[in-house]
Image (cartoon, rainbow, N blue to C red; front, side, top):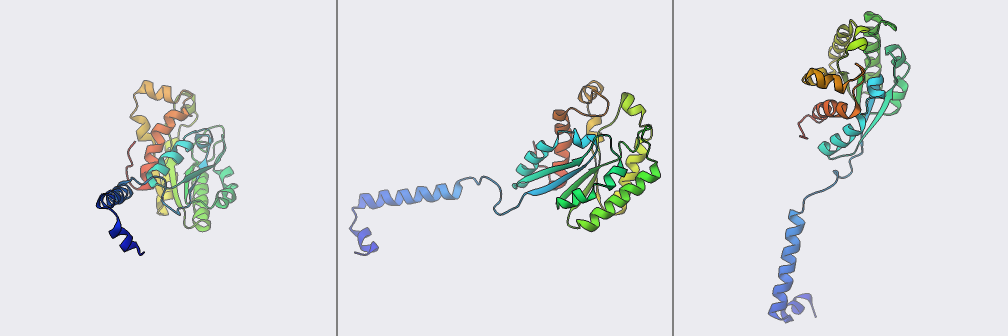
Length: 231
């Protein structure tokens, strides 16, 4: 007996019940919210390239989580960073950054160049960051390169960096000269009340990781995603 003849042979009550089940299943299928990441999208690879503000930053896990939720794809953040180092050291680490084949490179390399005890001259720092940016553009041409200014310094950490603003301006200028992106996190830090800012950066240089995540990550998510994802 064919399917059509079987259907016609069914009692009317059974046909109605069967039809109702099919209708409800179709509603659930159409209206069920989509969950998980977009299919077949590989993880977005980010390399955070910098100093202790990255090595000790603690904001990378929050960036992975929040950016993944915004983009609906996995995000993997890898750090190439070392406390106390300068652009001179960074020039020796370019192979490590390139080896990751990143989609995005976040760079903060001015802070220790500006310290009096290490004192990399402003002209040398500018030359170094220019060379770093040129090599990365050439060797990872598909990557978005984002140069960053991080948090303000205070106390002794600020005193040993009397010309840090000039270093930030030089690194920004080298980025913009090459048509690269620049993100300045300092205005978001400076919106905090003085007491809150001191509590967030108790040693005058290194923010507490949970506060750094709240200040830095939303700005990076918005910049990388190109939209405000909320939260």
